Length: 508
Image (tube, rainbow, N blue to C red):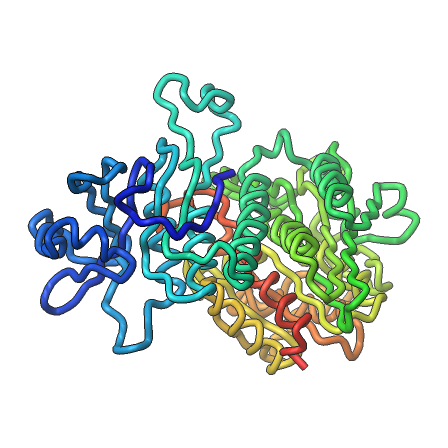
């Protein structure tokens, strides 16, 4: 993991491979951002002109490299675009700083140390820059020939060390911001690793073992229900989805508790370690990335561990509903009826609508503890991707104020999200002549139908929200900002922020 430190050193005398500065876009051309005054001075105050000559405009994501001025111990200056110059006295948006730091970290892959001289006016800026750099420096090379030796052949190791210039190493707020950035980023990157791990190595049993190891390390209580325990408990949804696989399902409960907690949050994650669609087999071209169908469980796992590392004064319970959805002679068939943990029966019309089945059991289990709120996270429906695209997740819930609070928390940490409705008329489409409810309803509005199905398994009177991260959980395109190709760790930061706000008493 990339190291992160604060420094009051001046840029010219700092030994590093590169000095990172910000450049913003204005109507008159590029503008050197605050934090780079010493660098600009070394160019006789003409750095903006030099950058413009090199083609820089200050657009978001833009990278311009130039030799460091005479007298600098670092050989390279890397100018990264921040986007438009902010309005007077508002300062740079923390997400702009986070993205810029991520772009810079990616551009400096193979470097040992970089000094970031980006605009840094308070602890929040330091945290955003640090988080962006740590997330941008992420790489997943475990399965490449040079994975164990980054220097082998043409392999390049991620940026090894980031120093934030202009920070206050002894200031409590700055230190706390950096510690938070490290904890959240490391756990988010752990979630990315899980999402990127091939399904022949990550199945329900091995995922549960990883959770057990992390729980032991961070003082989190853990309980794992294997197939026998699930059968004894009557978890028909999880068992039904996992019935076709040689790798049996698991339900993992992670419990972080604080002696000072006044509230209890429950996070529930969909953990389909591979989704073939089951008997309702996915068509060709839709299977290759289905290792990512456990992204919700990875996010919940990471958020609980992050809460423990940060010592948040709130109780957080994570439920990981783990199964592999495969076709075989023992697999659940379309037309089968499953008796869920809640006692309700579900007619399975489509075995590829399996995520809602494992979540239903986990939601009911979470409800039995009467938490103050439940949030489930899942790569649940292609319909949500059609509605919101590849970078925005949908939020549904049974409480408008809570849904709004989650939306605001997501936007605050830089995770694009959008509130979605739960139209009551769509519930009728799931009526079944055979069972209490079917796992499919109307085709149009499929993402909303899934949310209505999940609502059926939330305990009465419990505040609940559902995050459908099917779009942003796995990036099949090129990297951008601090987001890599592959697993993204979507929703981790939203869940952590929700836990922080709850601990602070800001959610009522």
